[in-house]
Amino acid sequence: MDADVVVVGAGLAGLVATAELVDAGRRVVVVDQEPPQHVGGQAFWSFGGLFLVDSPEQRRMGVKDSRELALQDWFGTAGFDREREDRWPRRWAEAYVDFAAGEKRSWLRSQGVSFFPVVGWAERGGYLADGPGNSVPRFHIVWGTGPGVVEPFWRRVKVGIERGLVRMAFRHRVDELLVHDGAVTGVRGTVLAPDDAPRGAPTSRTPVGGFALSAQAVVVTSGGIGGNHELVRAAWPERLGTPPTTMLSGVPDSVDGRMLGISERAGASHVNADRMWHYTEGIENHSPVWPMHGIRILPGPSSMWVDATGRRLPPPLFPGFDTLGTLEHIRRTGHDHTWFVTTQRIVEKEFALSGSEQNPDLTGRDLKLVASRVRPGATAPVDAFLRRGVDFVLAGDLRTLVRGMNDLVGEPLVDHDELERQVVARDREIENPFGKDAQVTAIHGARRYRGDRLIRTAAPHRLLDRAAGPLVAVRLHVVTRKSLGGLETDLSARVLRPDGEPLPGLYAAGEVAGFGGGGVHGYRSLEGTFLGGCLFSGRVAGRAVAAAL
Image 1: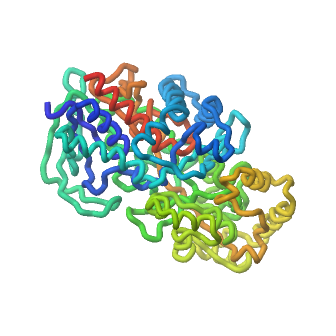
Image 2 (image 1 turned 180 degrees about the vertical axis):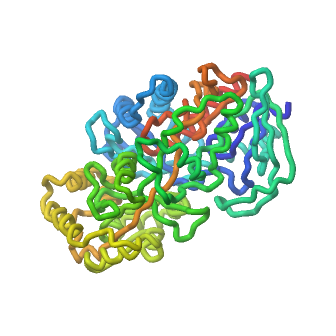
Image 3 (image 1 turned 120 degrees about the vertical axis):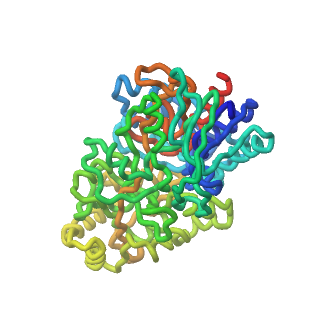
């Protein structure tokens, strides 16, 4: 044997699994098609949000949460409805909520992970109590964002390297899982030429040799399909209409989904492939790192969201409420883009940008910069998009704004008079702390939460109030992000065959396993559960493999 275990993928789930194997004294080879500077994978680029339940941070912000409420929200959001494919995802969901309400925070704290004190409220839903969405704020931002999540596990892996237990085989692309007598016994693949491309940028696929590794077990942690638009379109479900003609990429193109097909050919069960999670508030990065690099706006609740023709989206499809519902609605409009119509005052207070590089204050653990979030004015990254973003239109009056919107798309899709009618109607509702407009009600409701009032929700005002600064229109694209389906696994992260029995020697964790079970999120995510899914499933896989050998 070349090792006790081969781990395929040096992203967060792979690092967590390897760290657990090191603690158990197992010999591990980690193979990854990217160069060393890409270690940590997608997690490095993330905002670092983690789903926690009944945390001290929540309690300090006046939030009452419980395991029972979180499980109600999870199942109402997931919408599990497949007897066969959802068997294990249901069980993983219960196990994950138990983890998030239990030892998750203390486990992370023991490794030096700490949290920003204001808890975010993502995916608010806006439906009934047992429907989709978070009933309370649960989005805990790691101090250090994505790199701060990756750091402790990479540190533990490096201890394994120093002890001679871990070998990192970068630029090793797996092309085949080796199978003998029905069991996975290793991997075979191609050695790629060295590449010094910056983290996240495309790397060459020039072959310079081959390799084969044998082991007692293989753990696949290679991520999903978000960087491969061809696979995204092939898996696109009919219930979401036709795939967009144009999409942005929220992940590097190395997130190519290759290991899903490779694992299937070795006998693995791939379930819920039609479930996926793409954001609808994407903007083109003015300084792209990878092709079609999209940045997601993490919006507060106040911007008016209209479709490509200027018609307001129906309730509860407000900013930050229901990503999948919004995506379904957009695909029925016949257009790929939508618009936020807003004011500079709202942008400055409510626009946050997803990604570690878009949040230098939190990523760099810079208290002075963090303090600027509560002062007037946009953060530096948001201001850069206001000045340089190709999707932003600013104007002193609505007619000029509409002209700029139509000029940007090259068609007179938005009618000024109709948009003005809707804006004026909305503005009339904002004059009182009550009214019948569901979005205005939601804005007032958000401001009753201390965290939103402090840094995430602007004081209610008329969009046509000149004192609120220039009007702003933001063209929004669909930006690919996560696969919600994946390799079917049991609660020990063992990959299953189509007949439901374990495929000996093969384990999976992270996005390639649907973050556990082949689809722990069902149809929708509660947010903060992708990084957490990598942490939980990676830990389960590492510990299970170590115990089995």
